[in-house]
Length: 216
Ligand code: IMP
Image 1 (cartoon, rainbow, N blue to C red):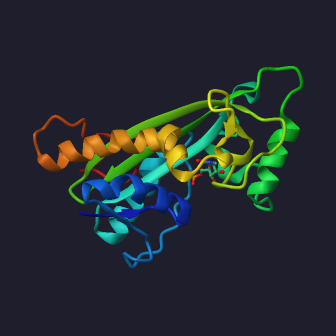
Image 2 (tube, rainbow, N blue to C red):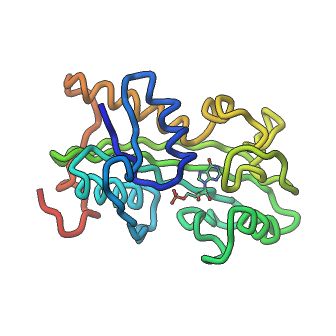
């Protein structure tokens, strides 16, 4: 089975395939599916944005589409950058600029606890929707460490492993990460959905109040 990924992030594509290829599911890029959709992330929750992206790509491609909306929520910043993680500090910043800004914005003397959140949504052309959420707790390091991963990985520290996400191998990161957890949950749901035994928590696009201009 082929799913189109509603993202242009090559690293997300690789992480998804590493986990889903074992069950015979191939995740392809929008380019592979012949579509080029840029979705405005107007939602205020990970669930909302994830659904907006998956729905737009499913409609453009006519194929099942899967989206991950993810971000870093820092307790001392009241959950910021959250759904704005990719845009934190504005358009001019790259990944390094964003995590440097985050380090600079960390209030002194307050707990540095944080969590990564990932919400995976899969929209099927018949209107069925699967949703899975994963979270990974950690802390914000005082300085970047490690070369791997992407985004805020160098400053996201896992106290149990005494390493940042950027110091883990892809396999080690998948085993504990928000996206790894959400993808495993999604994999289980997809397996049950494809088996058609009715035991999966499926909703339809028409049942979701946040879908605008779409009545199934
Ligand atoms: P999205 O592509 O709109 O979901 O934006 C997610 C943003 O959150 C990314 O651009 C990263 O800045 C950040 N992010 C999400 N997952 C990770 C991760 O696993 N490591 C580091 N940063 C992440």
